[in-house]
Each structure stands twice: as C-alpha cells, then as structure tokens.
Image 1 (spheres, helix red, strand yellow):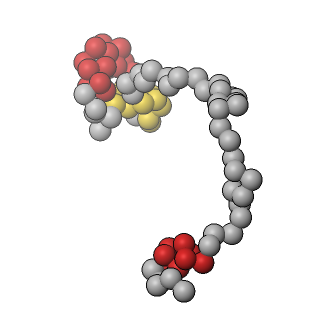
Image 2 (cartoon, helix red, strand yellow):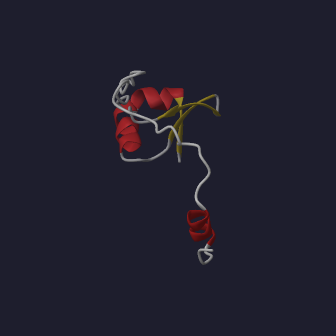
Length: 81
C-alpha cells in the first residue's frame, strides 16, 4: 500500500494513477491521516429493466408441489424405496 500526503499527490498524480491502474492500493492522506483511496474507474454494468422477460416465462402449476420419494432419496444418497 502506498500512502502519500495531499501535497505529494498533487505533484505525482500521474504516477499515482498509473500505480492504481496497475493494482496497487493508493491512499491519499491529510496531515498523515488517510482521507481517500485512489481506485481505477469501472464502467457501470448494463441497467436492468424490470419486466423485461414478461410473457416469455411460464411457471408450472405444480412448481411448489412435494418431490416424489425417489428424488428425495437420491438427494439424500439413499436407495429408492
């Protein structure tokens, strides 16, 4: 981790940016106390749209019905009854 005071950060900003882009943790301090951390910018992900799959999916009527005994036995590692 590299910690620099604000004055030093002003004069070496380009090098600090390169260090942060290379994966180094860069902290800028004020009067010796950590104030901010310099991190690489990440492009935000695609915005999600609620209801985008409306009408494209179907849930079966028996979706939450109990499983058959042979499937439960298989999950428990037992032989089927």
